[in-house]
Length: 307
Image 1: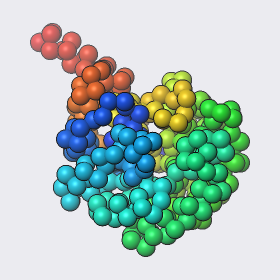
Image 2: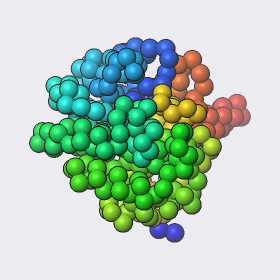
Image 3: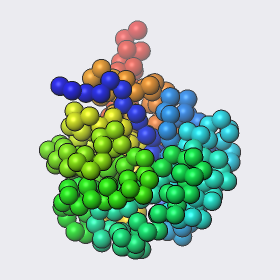
Image 4: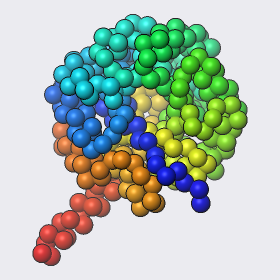
């Protein structure tokens, strides 16, 4: 078995996790969530997005959230910036990184951002160039890398071509997203193997939703190939407004537990991460969806009762 010694976890809860919530979450709650995630040791946190407030109203407060955070923390934050206006907002906030997002299927690209894949790349070209000129980290997300809600299965070569194009634009890291969570370990491995023909493994991250309960298995299969960056969402929050049937991301707590038990370092404290997941779950009025969180909390209660 060939696993990396250390895996970098990119926490996407404050953006990808919360964007699909219907009740608007307060600025103070989002600020405290990000502060708790940072205290747990998460070195890269997706704080929000500068997208249309009409299409994604939950992200309308992104600027206020970032402005309320300590300047020393902002360098650890990423935001989605689909256009130059969004990049201007990101630069004004002082964040450390930005991301652009393309889709591996034409239908999803049209539904999500209102243009074709080719048009999206041209739209992102000046954004990436300006971000790199400002010395920001730049990620490129690929949605529907293993399946599309409108077109079904997506060919790995199609994803690889798009990853190559995003890398050529200047995206330093490409995150392969199973937006609707239809992947399984073997297709996930085949996808990474195909993309790695065009983009080095060291520049790839994986982003799995857990719709069919396959996310952890998919992550492990990709780690065995040499991928060492994983996107996850605290408490398993998430879903996509433009992907029918998509449920939450893989839970950060579950990823940390799996990696720790496998001898892989994450630099994140599991107990503090669980507390962050409990905090946001309580504010949303539901239980923490992370299985590791629930199991460890149950274990503690049993031990306390036995004491």
